[in-house]
Image (tube, rainbow, N blue to C red; front, side, top):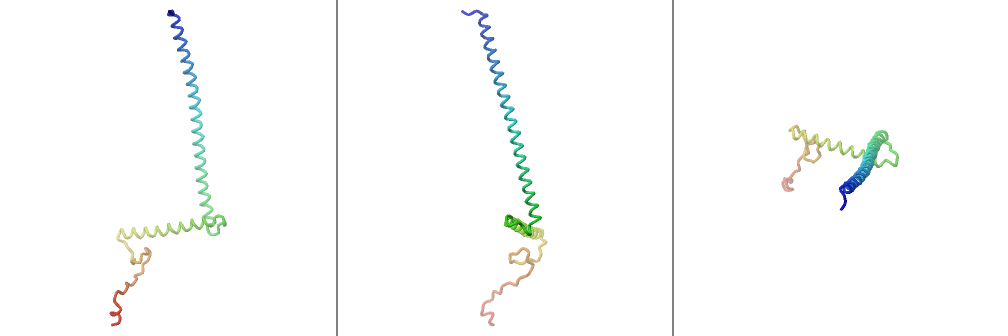
Amino acid sequence: MPSNEDFKKKVKDAFSTIADVSVEAYKLAEEKSRILAKKAKLNAGIANEKATIRRLNVEIGATYYKMYKDSPDDALKQQCEGVTAAYERIEQKQRELESLKKQANNETDEHCDCGDADCTTEHTSEDNSTDEEKAD
């Protein structure tokens, strides 16, 4: 039967081994955490730079449009025309909104029923009389 001293030594050795393994596991986890944190920081930095590029590309495009919308380079002519057309559609929709706001506030202008929100002409109503009545 093993002596009490042998048992204590084996327990001490076992705890020492467990402690060594725990320290190594801690160091490994710490290194992995450090690497993961650095990767996250780098990925965030990359995402921020990409956002900066997108914002600057939009600013470049807006500046180009303002400078050359009337005489764009052939490579960008279609896009400039598309932007101009979109601005025109926005203006039309804003006019329609203003008209609707006035109607909602009972501030309507004299609009006809032709479907054109900007029309102020009073169209004559169609003559619904029959041909026989017109002949009289």
